[in-house]
Length: 243
Image (cartoon, rainbow, N blue to C red; front, side):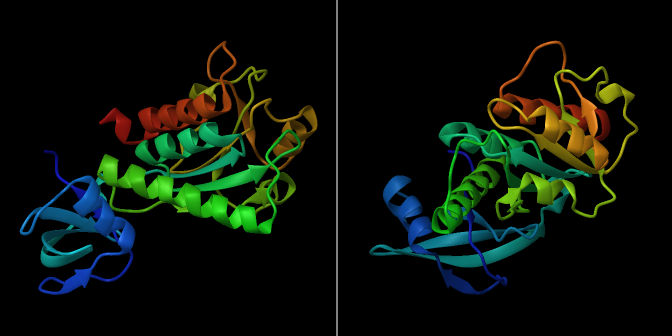
């Protein structure tokens, strides 16, 4: 069995014991059917990895912390902020999951003219929690110990006007430029439209606010594919996929 990794928020110290939350306890005891004295890893999303021994008491799982190690070396040198136009259901989930696996630093879901998902305040909060849970699961699977942040949903007009020194890239299938013509940077924002893409007005506004339009080859990509293609490209050219 591969090494089991579990996310838990909080501060851990070697020699201490913590009771895991209900979700983690259920996963270890009921899903994975782990028994007493099983060794697994904990991380709190801040770059440290903790080896722990499991104690099972009914439905409760207790982790006895044995050792710690700095695990931040697995993180990319690039600071990638994905600005993802909100798409329906599994497409958005897929984009978030795979973006985290590829090393994205943070994700902001963006309302655009062609966004078809209508969310009131309560549903926005639930969706954000859902997307953060997907990011946590992707970290557990991929070995990341720094948890990317899922920012609150933001309107397109707000996100393009934000103050930043980052390289701002906009995926535009009609652009005549590509990633190879862009000067490298360690801080990058990538703007992706929802299904249906960004409108001509939005593309024009984004470029007026410093976004550089690039295309990912001659084909038109789905929104979830576009995000992964862009992140993979910058990681391959300037990040850790080149290693």
